[in-house]
Length: 268
Image (cartoon, rainbow, N blue to C red; front, side):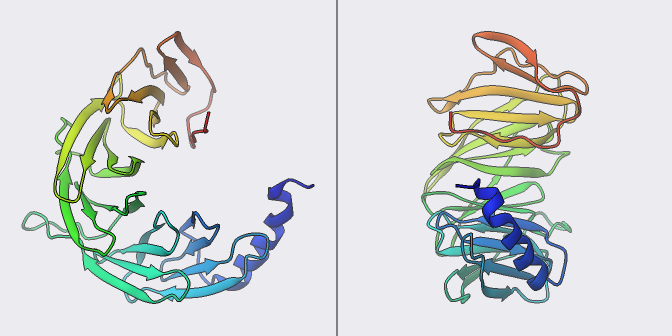
């Protein structure tokens, strides 16, 4: 059997080039194999490979689409807009299920756009705008507004939102990573930790079990373990123009030479 990439990539290219009339800004895959392709004005929903048949085109309205994500069950897709609104769409029908607005922040703030959206297996939706992260329920109800408490929080926006498990969400602010535990009724910040040296984090990847994070800095990469709801920063190191990895049983080792542009985690 031919590798999966070779069997469906040509079909993928033909489908997208014939249906997307604007530059693609993001791609998302659902747990059911559906593919969501976003442009500034629309979300295109495709069947799983190898057919990749276009099933629905969702037009979000006048505001530019700035973020999209599938819910954990793959039945809905959530879009965030430049106007601060989030919309839930049913994948099979393309019907708009609900709409909610990112809560207003401090007076005079010009931050409106929803930069990122991430969905947990418990049905929570995390959305980032400016220095705030809001958690919504499966029906679009606003549950919590979170803000980072670290030293970098006042000078950096939140980004790279990620769910470590069904109720633990993380986001980056400058050189710091904040971790919160959330439920329907309440939330608490578990810990804030920082890259060493204090270099802005540009990429973040989590292992599927949520125990490990790898963070790429402006000048390298730091990796450290996550276990039992707490973080222990080990002998991690950044090296200018290089990637280094640190663990509890080994000294940091250089992995690659060029600046980091992408990181990903495995199931190992």
